[in-house]
Image 1 (cartoon, rainbow, N blue to C red):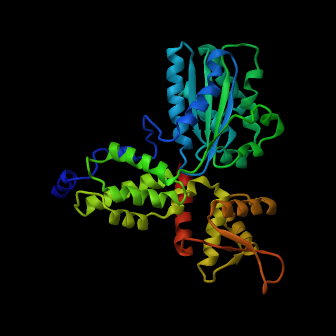
Image 2: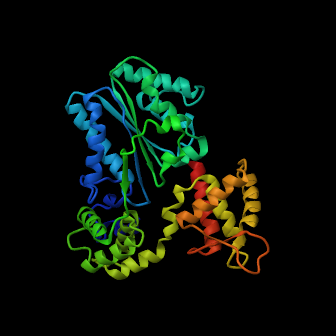
Length: 394
């Protein structure tokens, strides 16, 4: 066991590596103060009257959406408590809970941990939540992170029910508000009844971080996670330059973490640009985005990889759709119709997972040609297989 003691007692550039965890939310969010203030202005009305507010936070991966929601909800519930107002906030990850019943179960068990995990309808669980709020005279903020997954799988019915929650009873003293988080403008996915409860101004848009803004984030995390002078100043610039190509703070933080590991592995006391270059080579950028896909989008992407690994730069939507049906059989899923399949292809293209373009000369008919921009097809197929397996275990 000496090797364990030697490894754990050796020198390290880190002082608290947990500060580089994606779930960690610092006390201050650099360059996101105005976003927090806008949420405070909107939800502040709850403290003054028995009303509800519904807000959408949208932006690409790594723009701080989830961190903003966590920071705001923590601060707002504490402020409300000091003001004598009871407010609870419940966050639901819609990748993990992508059905109406599983979302409602999360809300019920927040108040009643022993609530059975099966045997109750959505309406019954809604009534249970209502009774808990009545009893506590409590306002509830429901945070639906990556809500587009829920909407794509189950439709807008639950959103409608939650936005109409306060109309079901004449009692006052409690409300339900929604904080939706997505990369997409999911308001376009709602029906008119649910959409009518969202004010056009209640959208908080998170733009991609600039290189300068990423430097602020990187320096903050260095101060929290690394020992004094453990990170070379040129390293900061290089990490910011790489991550600024997509404005992705998550990528910047992951690069810092893996570069620090490289420094420790080499027994070098400072994180240098070369460590960053090695770290970048070990990070498949696509991995950071896979969890944002639905199961059917993942299966389609895996099938693109499966056909392209046999050779050739392009495949067709027709070939991919045939293999998509094979994948549905493999995973016990009902294939979606052609229109929905085509929407999945457009989404994968928009996210940058594939390149899709109309066929040119030499191709019979009017079809769409698909290629992979970054990752080798063989690697991608295995990556998708592991990701789907991981999602099934959640």
